[in-house]
Image (tube, rainbow, N blue to C red; front, side):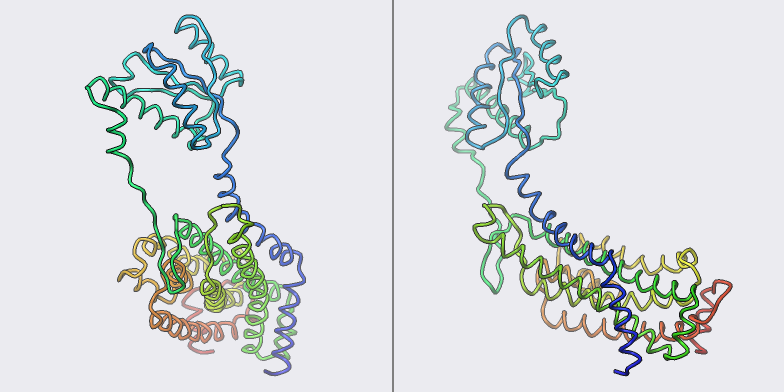
Length: 417
Protein backbone atom coordinates (compact mmCIF):
# COMPACT_ATOMS: atom_id res chain seq x y z
CA UNK A 1 0.00 0.00 0.00
CA UNK A 2 1.54 3.30 -1.12
CA UNK A 3 1.84 6.32 1.12
CA UNK A 4 -0.62 8.30 -1.03
CA UNK A 5 -3.24 5.58 -0.88
CA UNK A 6 -2.85 5.26 2.88
CA UNK A 7 -3.20 9.04 3.24
CA UNK A 8 -6.51 8.98 1.35
CA UNK A 9 -7.80 6.04 3.42
CA UNK A 10 -6.79 7.73 6.66
CA UNK A 11 -8.41 11.01 5.66
CA UNK A 12 -11.68 9.39 4.61
CA UNK A 13 -11.83 7.22 7.72
CA UNK A 14 -11.10 9.96 10.24
CA UNK A 15 -13.44 12.38 8.52
CA UNK A 16 -16.32 9.91 8.92
CA UNK A 17 -15.69 8.56 12.42
CA UNK A 18 -15.17 12.03 13.88
CA UNK A 19 -18.51 13.31 12.59
CA UNK A 20 -21.41 13.78 14.98
CA UNK A 21 -23.67 11.72 12.75
CA UNK A 22 -21.33 8.71 13.00
CA UNK A 23 -20.96 8.96 16.76
CA UNK A 24 -24.69 9.37 17.33
CA UNK A 25 -25.56 6.56 14.88
CA UNK A 26 -23.04 4.20 16.46
CA UNK A 27 -24.41 4.83 19.95
CA UNK A 28 -28.11 5.02 19.09
CA UNK A 29 -28.02 1.97 16.77
CA UNK A 30 -27.50 -0.64 19.53
CA UNK A 31 -30.09 1.10 21.70
CA UNK A 32 -32.65 0.90 18.91
CA UNK A 33 -31.76 -2.73 18.17
CA UNK A 34 -32.08 -3.63 21.83
CA UNK A 35 -35.41 -1.85 21.99
CA UNK A 36 -36.69 -3.60 18.85
CA UNK A 37 -35.71 -7.01 20.25
CA UNK A 38 -36.63 -6.59 23.92
CA UNK A 39 -39.43 -4.04 24.24
CA UNK A 40 -42.10 -5.90 22.21
CA UNK A 41 -41.55 -9.05 24.28
CA UNK A 42 -41.52 -7.01 27.50
CA UNK A 43 -44.76 -5.24 26.61
CA UNK A 44 -46.39 -8.48 25.47
CA UNK A 45 -45.43 -10.25 28.68
CA UNK A 46 -46.73 -7.49 30.94
CA UNK A 47 -49.75 -6.47 28.90
CA UNK A 48 -51.28 -3.03 28.76
CA UNK A 49 -53.30 -1.01 31.23
CA UNK A 50 -56.08 -2.64 33.22
CA UNK A 51 -59.16 -3.12 31.02
CA UNK A 52 -62.38 -2.28 32.89
CA UNK A 53 -65.35 -4.13 31.41
CA UNK A 54 -68.96 -4.93 32.28
CA UNK A 55 -71.35 -7.63 31.06
CA UNK A 56 -74.89 -6.79 29.98
CA UNK A 57 -77.01 -9.93 29.53
CA UNK A 58 -80.36 -9.91 27.72
CA UNK A 59 -80.90 -13.68 28.08
CA UNK A 60 -81.44 -13.50 31.82
CA UNK A 61 -79.41 -16.66 32.50
CA UNK A 62 -75.83 -15.87 31.50
CA UNK A 63 -74.90 -12.81 33.56
CA UNK A 64 -73.45 -14.50 36.65
CA UNK A 65 -71.89 -17.35 34.66
CA UNK A 66 -70.13 -15.01 32.22
CA UNK A 67 -68.80 -12.84 35.04
CA UNK A 68 -67.53 -15.94 36.86
CA UNK A 69 -65.97 -17.33 33.68
CA UNK A 70 -64.18 -14.04 32.98
CA UNK A 71 -62.89 -13.80 36.54
CA UNK A 72 -61.50 -17.33 36.30
CA UNK A 73 -59.89 -16.56 32.94
CA UNK A 74 -58.32 -13.43 34.41
CA UNK A 75 -56.82 -15.34 37.33
CA UNK A 76 -55.65 -18.36 35.33
CA UNK A 77 -54.18 -16.52 32.33
CA UNK A 78 -53.16 -13.31 34.11
CA UNK A 79 -55.16 -11.14 31.73
CA UNK A 80 -55.27 -7.49 32.66
CA UNK A 81 -59.00 -6.81 32.89
CA UNK A 82 -61.55 -6.56 35.66
CA UNK A 83 -65.29 -7.19 35.50
CA UNK A 84 -67.57 -4.52 36.92
CA UNK A 85 -71.28 -4.56 37.73
CA UNK A 86 -73.62 -3.29 34.98
CA UNK A 87 -75.80 -1.56 37.57
CA UNK A 88 -79.55 -1.92 38.12
CA UNK A 89 -82.72 -0.95 36.30
CA UNK A 90 -84.22 -1.94 32.99
CA UNK A 91 -82.10 -3.42 30.23
CA UNK A 92 -82.35 -0.24 28.17
CA UNK A 93 -81.44 1.98 31.13
CA UNK A 94 -78.42 -0.15 32.01
CA UNK A 95 -77.23 -0.14 28.39
CA UNK A 96 -77.55 3.64 28.21
CA UNK A 97 -75.69 4.03 31.52
CA UNK A 98 -72.86 1.76 30.33
CA UNK A 99 -72.53 3.68 27.06
CA UNK A 100 -72.27 6.90 29.05
CA UNK A 101 -69.60 5.44 31.35
CA UNK A 102 -67.58 4.31 28.35
CA UNK A 103 -67.75 7.74 26.73
CA UNK A 104 -66.83 9.45 30.02
CA UNK A 105 -63.84 7.12 30.50
CA UNK A 106 -64.87 5.51 33.78
CA UNK A 107 -65.38 2.21 31.90
CA UNK A 108 -63.34 0.87 29.00
CA UNK A 109 -66.09 -1.23 27.44
CA UNK A 110 -68.97 -3.60 27.96
CA UNK A 111 -70.02 -6.94 26.52
CA UNK A 112 -73.61 -7.17 25.31
CA UNK A 113 -75.27 -10.59 25.06
CA UNK A 114 -78.53 -10.48 23.04
CA UNK A 115 -81.57 -12.61 23.84
CA UNK A 116 -80.60 -15.26 21.29
CA UNK A 117 -76.92 -15.34 22.32
CA UNK A 118 -76.98 -19.06 23.20
CA UNK A 119 -78.62 -20.19 19.95
CA UNK A 120 -76.70 -17.89 17.60
CA UNK A 121 -73.40 -17.58 19.50
CA UNK A 122 -73.62 -13.80 19.19
CA UNK A 123 -72.00 -11.20 21.41
CA UNK A 124 -70.95 -7.59 20.87
CA UNK A 125 -68.25 -5.62 22.61
CA UNK A 126 -68.58 -1.82 22.83
CA UNK A 127 -65.48 0.10 23.88
CA UNK A 128 -63.53 3.30 23.47
CA UNK A 129 -60.83 1.27 21.78
CA UNK A 130 -60.52 -2.28 20.49
CA UNK A 131 -56.72 -2.32 20.17
CA UNK A 132 -56.20 -4.48 23.28
CA UNK A 133 -56.57 -7.65 21.23
CA UNK A 134 -54.89 -9.97 23.76
CA UNK A 135 -57.45 -9.35 26.50
CA UNK A 136 -60.39 -8.98 24.13
CA UNK A 137 -59.55 -12.33 22.52
CA UNK A 138 -59.49 -13.93 25.96
CA UNK A 139 -62.93 -12.48 26.70
CA UNK A 140 -64.21 -13.69 23.35
CA UNK A 141 -63.00 -17.28 23.70
CA UNK A 142 -64.16 -17.52 27.32
CA UNK A 143 -67.68 -16.43 26.43
CA UNK A 144 -67.67 -18.68 23.37
CA UNK A 145 -66.81 -21.72 25.50
CA UNK A 146 -69.62 -20.84 27.90
CA UNK A 147 -72.17 -20.55 25.08
CA UNK A 148 -71.03 -23.86 23.61
CA UNK A 149 -71.37 -25.49 27.04
CA UNK A 150 -74.97 -24.25 27.29
CA UNK A 151 -75.87 -25.70 23.91
CA UNK A 152 -74.25 -29.02 24.80
CA UNK A 153 -76.16 -29.18 28.07
CA UNK A 154 -79.42 -28.41 26.25
CA UNK A 155 -78.62 -31.30 23.89
CA UNK A 156 -78.16 -33.70 26.82
CA UNK A 157 -74.33 -33.83 26.62
CA UNK A 158 -71.86 -33.31 29.44
CA UNK A 159 -69.98 -30.07 28.61
CA UNK A 160 -66.98 -31.00 30.77
CA UNK A 161 -66.65 -34.40 29.10
CA UNK A 162 -66.94 -32.88 25.62
CA UNK A 163 -64.37 -30.22 26.51
CA UNK A 164 -61.97 -32.89 27.72
CA UNK A 165 -62.37 -34.94 24.54
CA UNK A 166 -62.03 -31.91 22.22
CA UNK A 167 -59.22 -30.11 24.04
CA UNK A 168 -56.68 -28.28 21.91
CA UNK A 169 -53.47 -29.97 20.85
CA UNK A 170 -50.32 -28.82 22.58
CA UNK A 171 -48.05 -27.55 19.82
CA UNK A 172 -44.34 -26.78 20.08
CA UNK A 173 -41.78 -25.90 17.42
CA UNK A 174 -38.20 -27.03 18.04
CA UNK A 175 -35.31 -25.85 15.90
CA UNK A 176 -32.64 -28.50 15.36
CA UNK A 177 -29.05 -27.52 14.57
CA UNK A 178 -25.54 -28.82 15.05
CA UNK A 179 -25.43 -26.96 18.38
CA UNK A 180 -28.47 -28.86 19.66
CA UNK A 181 -32.18 -28.13 19.85
CA UNK A 182 -33.98 -24.98 20.95
CA UNK A 183 -37.65 -24.12 21.11
CA UNK A 184 -38.53 -21.40 18.60
CA UNK A 185 -41.86 -19.60 18.86
CA UNK A 186 -41.37 -17.71 15.61
CA UNK A 187 -39.01 -15.14 17.07
CA UNK A 188 -36.28 -16.33 14.70
CA UNK A 189 -38.28 -14.83 11.83
CA UNK A 190 -38.50 -11.52 13.69
CA UNK A 191 -34.73 -11.55 14.20
CA UNK A 192 -34.16 -12.33 10.51
CA UNK A 193 -36.35 -9.45 9.36
CA UNK A 194 -34.74 -6.98 11.80
CA UNK A 195 -31.20 -7.93 10.72
CA UNK A 196 -32.19 -7.84 7.04
CA UNK A 197 -33.54 -4.30 7.43
CA UNK A 198 -30.38 -3.18 9.25
CA UNK A 199 -28.22 -4.69 6.50
CA UNK A 200 -30.31 -3.10 3.75
CA UNK A 201 -30.28 0.32 5.42
CA UNK A 202 -26.54 0.20 6.15
CA UNK A 203 -25.54 -0.75 2.60
CA UNK A 204 -27.77 1.98 1.21
CA UNK A 205 -26.60 4.58 3.72
CA UNK A 206 -22.86 4.02 3.40
CA UNK A 207 -23.07 3.79 -0.37
CA UNK A 208 -24.72 7.21 -0.45
CA UNK A 209 -22.03 8.51 1.91
CA UNK A 210 -19.44 7.59 -0.71
CA UNK A 211 -21.43 9.26 -3.47
CA UNK A 212 -22.07 12.36 -1.39
CA UNK A 213 -18.37 12.68 -0.56
CA UNK A 214 -17.37 12.47 -4.23
CA UNK A 215 -20.00 15.04 -5.30
CA UNK A 216 -19.02 17.41 -2.49
CA UNK A 217 -15.31 17.26 -3.38
CA UNK A 218 -16.09 17.65 -7.06
CA UNK A 219 -18.42 20.62 -6.64
CA UNK A 220 -15.93 22.41 -4.34
CA UNK A 221 -13.07 21.67 -6.79
CA UNK A 222 -11.13 19.96 -3.99
CA UNK A 223 -10.94 16.88 -6.20
CA UNK A 224 -8.79 18.77 -8.72
CA UNK A 225 -6.13 19.44 -6.12
CA UNK A 226 -6.21 15.89 -4.77
CA UNK A 227 -6.25 14.29 -8.23
CA UNK A 228 -3.17 16.24 -9.24
CA UNK A 229 -1.11 14.33 -6.70
CA UNK A 230 -2.93 11.00 -6.45
CA UNK A 231 -3.84 8.68 -9.35
CA UNK A 232 -7.59 8.35 -9.86
CA UNK A 233 -7.52 4.60 -9.22
CA UNK A 234 -5.80 5.10 -5.87
CA UNK A 235 -8.18 7.95 -5.07
CA UNK A 236 -11.20 5.71 -5.72
CA UNK A 237 -9.67 2.81 -3.79
CA UNK A 238 -8.78 5.06 -0.87
CA UNK A 239 -12.27 6.49 -0.69
CA UNK A 240 -13.90 3.07 -0.78
CA UNK A 241 -11.50 1.59 1.78
CA UNK A 242 -11.66 4.61 4.09
CA UNK A 243 -15.44 4.93 4.10
CA UNK A 244 -15.77 1.14 4.19
CA UNK A 245 -13.52 1.01 7.26
CA UNK A 246 -15.73 3.61 8.97
CA UNK A 247 -18.82 1.59 8.09
CA UNK A 248 -17.13 -1.58 9.31
CA UNK A 249 -16.26 0.12 12.60
CA UNK A 250 -19.88 1.03 13.15
CA UNK A 251 -21.05 -2.39 12.03
CA UNK A 252 -18.66 -4.16 14.41
CA UNK A 253 -19.96 -2.07 17.29
CA UNK A 254 -23.52 -2.99 16.32
CA UNK A 255 -22.64 -6.69 15.94
CA UNK A 256 -20.91 -6.85 19.32
CA UNK A 257 -23.89 -5.06 20.84
CA UNK A 258 -26.21 -7.66 19.31
CA UNK A 259 -24.05 -10.41 20.78
CA UNK A 260 -24.14 -8.68 24.16
CA UNK A 261 -27.93 -8.36 24.03
CA UNK A 262 -28.26 -12.03 23.09
CA UNK A 263 -25.96 -13.18 25.91
CA UNK A 264 -27.55 -10.87 28.47
CA UNK A 265 -31.09 -11.99 27.67
CA UNK A 266 -30.23 -15.69 27.44
CA UNK A 267 -29.85 -16.10 31.19
CA UNK A 268 -31.68 -14.98 34.33
CA UNK A 269 -31.53 -11.34 33.24
CA UNK A 270 -34.11 -12.10 30.56
CA UNK A 271 -36.78 -12.51 33.22
CA UNK A 272 -38.47 -15.24 31.21
CA UNK A 273 -38.78 -13.10 28.08
CA UNK A 274 -38.73 -15.00 24.77
CA UNK A 275 -35.66 -13.35 23.18
CA UNK A 276 -34.45 -14.73 19.82
CA UNK A 277 -31.07 -16.44 19.92
CA UNK A 278 -28.25 -14.91 17.85
CA UNK A 279 -25.75 -17.51 16.67
CA UNK A 280 -22.06 -16.57 16.17
CA UNK A 281 -22.35 -17.66 12.54
CA UNK A 282 -25.10 -15.11 12.02
CA UNK A 283 -22.96 -12.29 13.40
CA UNK A 284 -20.01 -13.27 11.20
CA UNK A 285 -22.27 -13.39 8.15
CA UNK A 286 -23.79 -10.06 9.22
CA UNK A 287 -20.37 -8.37 8.93
CA UNK A 288 -19.13 -10.28 5.87
CA UNK A 289 -22.20 -9.60 3.75
CA UNK A 290 -22.23 -5.97 4.79
CA UNK A 291 -18.67 -5.64 3.47
CA UNK A 292 -19.56 -7.43 0.24
CA UNK A 293 -22.70 -5.37 -0.25
CA UNK A 294 -20.86 -2.15 0.53
CA UNK A 295 -18.00 -2.90 -1.87
CA UNK A 296 -20.45 -3.73 -4.67
CA UNK A 297 -22.94 -0.89 -4.28
CA UNK A 298 -20.51 1.78 -3.04
CA UNK A 299 -18.44 1.29 -6.22
CA UNK A 300 -21.53 2.07 -8.28
CA UNK A 301 -22.37 5.03 -6.06
CA UNK A 302 -18.83 6.38 -6.45
CA UNK A 303 -19.14 6.14 -10.23
CA UNK A 304 -22.41 8.08 -10.11
CA UNK A 305 -20.88 10.71 -7.84
CA UNK A 306 -17.99 11.21 -10.29
CA UNK A 307 -20.33 11.48 -13.27
CA UNK A 308 -22.68 14.19 -11.93
CA UNK A 309 -22.29 17.63 -10.42
CA UNK A 310 -25.08 17.76 -7.83
CA UNK A 311 -27.19 15.40 -5.72
CA UNK A 312 -30.23 16.36 -7.79
CA UNK A 313 -28.52 15.16 -10.98
CA UNK A 314 -27.61 11.90 -9.26
CA UNK A 315 -31.24 10.91 -8.64
CA UNK A 316 -31.79 9.60 -12.18
CA UNK A 317 -28.77 7.30 -11.88
CA UNK A 318 -29.51 6.13 -8.33
CA UNK A 319 -32.85 4.52 -9.15
CA UNK A 320 -31.45 1.58 -11.18
CA UNK A 321 -29.06 0.83 -8.29
CA UNK A 322 -31.74 0.90 -5.60
CA UNK A 323 -34.12 -1.39 -7.51
CA UNK A 324 -32.09 -4.59 -6.84
CA UNK A 325 -31.89 -3.76 -3.12
CA UNK A 326 -35.64 -3.21 -2.99
CA UNK A 327 -36.12 -6.43 -4.95
CA UNK A 328 -34.09 -8.22 -2.26
CA UNK A 329 -36.55 -7.01 0.38
CA UNK A 330 -39.54 -7.92 -1.77
CA UNK A 331 -38.20 -11.47 -2.23
CA UNK A 332 -37.63 -12.17 1.46
CA UNK A 333 -40.98 -14.05 1.87
CA UNK A 334 -39.69 -16.58 -0.69
CA UNK A 335 -36.70 -17.26 1.57
CA UNK A 336 -38.84 -17.49 4.70
CA UNK A 337 -41.27 -19.92 3.07
CA UNK A 338 -38.63 -22.29 1.66
CA UNK A 339 -35.03 -21.25 2.43
CA UNK A 340 -33.57 -24.31 0.69
CA UNK A 341 -35.99 -24.32 -2.26
CA UNK A 342 -34.83 -24.00 -5.87
CA UNK A 343 -36.10 -20.42 -6.25
CA UNK A 344 -34.52 -19.32 -2.97
CA UNK A 345 -31.17 -20.84 -3.97
CA UNK A 346 -31.28 -19.22 -7.42
CA UNK A 347 -32.18 -15.77 -6.07
CA UNK A 348 -29.49 -15.93 -3.40
CA UNK A 349 -26.80 -16.48 -6.07
CA UNK A 350 -27.62 -13.36 -8.11
CA UNK A 351 -24.87 -10.77 -7.43
CA UNK A 352 -27.26 -7.86 -6.81
CA UNK A 353 -29.24 -9.93 -4.29
CA UNK A 354 -26.51 -12.00 -2.61
CA UNK A 355 -25.76 -9.56 0.26
CA UNK A 356 -29.37 -9.64 1.43
CA UNK A 357 -30.81 -12.99 0.43
CA UNK A 358 -27.84 -15.29 1.12
CA UNK A 359 -27.49 -13.65 4.52
CA UNK A 360 -31.21 -14.17 5.15
CA UNK A 361 -30.87 -17.86 4.25
CA UNK A 362 -28.02 -18.20 6.75
CA UNK A 363 -30.19 -16.69 9.48
CA UNK A 364 -33.22 -18.86 8.72
CA UNK A 365 -31.57 -22.16 7.76
CA UNK A 366 -27.83 -22.34 7.13
CA UNK A 367 -27.41 -23.49 3.50
CA UNK A 368 -24.79 -26.04 2.41
CA UNK A 369 -21.25 -24.70 2.60
CA UNK A 370 -20.74 -25.02 -1.15
CA UNK A 371 -23.62 -22.61 -1.75
CA UNK A 372 -22.15 -20.07 0.66
CA UNK A 373 -18.72 -20.48 -0.96
CA UNK A 374 -20.23 -20.12 -4.44
CA UNK A 375 -22.03 -16.94 -3.41
CA UNK A 376 -18.73 -15.50 -2.13
CA UNK A 377 -16.97 -16.37 -5.38
CA UNK A 378 -19.79 -14.90 -7.48
CA UNK A 379 -19.87 -11.79 -5.33
CA UNK A 380 -16.08 -11.41 -5.55
CA UNK A 381 -16.22 -11.57 -9.35
CA UNK A 382 -19.12 -9.10 -9.42
CA UNK A 383 -17.24 -6.68 -7.17
CA UNK A 384 -14.17 -6.89 -9.40
CA UNK A 385 -16.40 -6.12 -12.40
CA UNK A 386 -18.11 -3.08 -10.88
CA UNK A 387 -14.77 -1.79 -9.55
CA UNK A 388 -13.36 -1.96 -13.08
CA UNK A 389 -16.45 -0.19 -14.43
CA UNK A 390 -16.48 2.42 -11.65
CA UNK A 391 -12.74 3.04 -12.02
CA UNK A 392 -13.07 3.95 -15.69
CA UNK A 393 -16.05 6.24 -15.10
CA UNK A 394 -14.35 7.78 -12.08
CA UNK A 395 -11.15 8.47 -14.03
CA UNK A 396 -13.00 10.62 -16.54
CA UNK A 397 -15.88 11.91 -14.46
CA UNK A 398 -14.09 13.51 -11.53
CA UNK A 399 -12.66 16.24 -13.77
CA UNK A 400 -15.77 16.68 -15.95
CA UNK A 401 -18.09 19.62 -15.25
CA UNK A 402 -21.12 21.12 -16.93
CA UNK A 403 -23.90 19.10 -18.53
CA UNK A 404 -25.01 15.89 -16.87
CA UNK A 405 -23.84 12.90 -18.93
CA UNK A 406 -26.28 10.44 -20.47
CA UNK A 407 -25.99 6.66 -20.21
CA UNK A 408 -24.52 6.38 -23.74
CA UNK A 409 -21.88 8.97 -22.78
CA UNK A 410 -21.01 6.96 -19.68
CA UNK A 411 -20.52 3.89 -21.84
CA UNK A 412 -18.14 5.88 -24.07
CA UNK A 413 -16.16 6.85 -20.97
CA UNK A 414 -15.92 3.17 -20.05
CA UNK A 415 -14.72 2.18 -23.51
CA UNK A 416 -12.18 4.94 -24.01
CA UNK A 417 -10.91 5.66 -20.47
